[in-house]
Image (cartoon, rainbow, N blue to C red; front, side, top):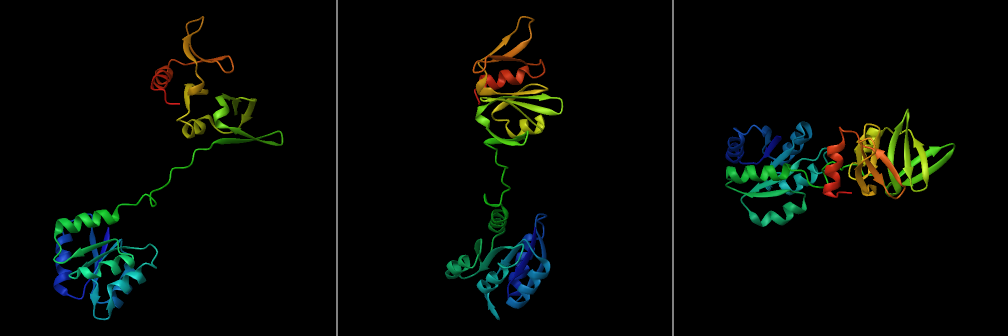
Length: 240
């Protein structure tokens, strides 16, 4: 993480630099002694974090923080000052943390780790799992609720969707359907996925092969030896 230090006191700047000197996770890429230099430096270097004093000769750190909030990407602001009465205005200006001088190394590192940690809103969102599958077939658009699907079965270049209203073909790959609907469906064979909650029984057929029985449609589907352990596991777990 790149860090810029802003403080009109040379000794204060040097102390912060020393505290971070041995920390590989943080690199001090510049320092400034006044508000105008701070804004210019941050605009040029685009740091991840700014350690910012509140009181400076040509303007307040609070004003600097408001200016830095317009940068893209916006740096995390940590106010470092000897005056705790400025805390409220500092947070109003967009500061993520507030440290009182003299700064202790342990407290500094703890604060930097916290402000660098992404918030829930900043974390990448997992793609939403569809509740319906749209299929265009013979010029008509069909919207099939996922909860009405009994199984998917690969058939040459298509995948057959067996659902409560019948059957339909889609060009979606079986692999991508498995990845998206892994919570609901289990692979029973290299060419088939079955809705776990629709499985009424796991049994042997007349020739000794394993199969799942789907009572809602009175159909049985062969389970390969390779996928049998996972099918058993999902049925025992009861995760539908």
